[in-house]
Amino acid sequence: MVDSTLITDTDTDTDTDTSVAEPAVKPHLILALDYGVKKMGMALGNSLTETARAFDILAMNNGQPDWDNLLGIIKVWGVAKVVVGLPLNMDGSSSMLSKRAHKFARRLAHRIMEQHLPVTVILCDERLTSVGAREIAWENGWIQNERDPIDDISACILMSTYFADPSSSIAIDAIKAD
Picture: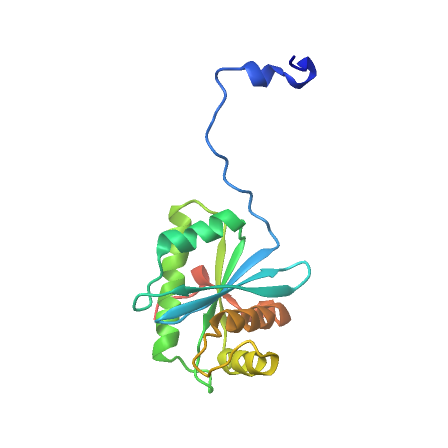
C-alpha cells in the first residue's frame, strides 16, 4: 500500500529537471593553498570561527596541479574564497617561487571565471609558514622525519595569517602581472 500523503504534484510531473544541482557556495568557507612546484598544501578555513584544518596535499607537476581535481574540490566543498600563499623573500621582495605562485593564482582565477564560479582568489604573504609548520609538526609528533610533508599544516598557518589581517591580502584581479 502506498501512502498517498507522500505523493505530490512534482512527484508525478514528467517534465522535471533531473540534472544534479551544484552545491551552494558557503560564504564562510575558505581554501588556503600553500603553493609549491612539487606539491601544494591545502587547508579549509571557516571565516565565522576563524579556524582552519589541514585538508590535503596535492601533487604538482612542475608547479601545475590537476586542474580538474582542484576545481572539483572548490565546487564540491562550496568554497567562496581561495587564499594562495605568496612566498616572498624575508625583505619582502619577490622570489622566483613567488612569481610562479602569482602566475598560478592568476591561472586559477581565470579557470574559476571560466567555470562561472562565484569564488574570489587572493594572495597572502606566507613567509615562514613552512618553518612554523615543521616546528608544530615536530612538537606534536605528527612527523617522524624532517622530510615528512607538512604542506597542509603550512596552509593552516597561511589561513591563520589571513584571518589575523585580511586587509593585507590582495585580490588577484587587482594586481598586474609581473
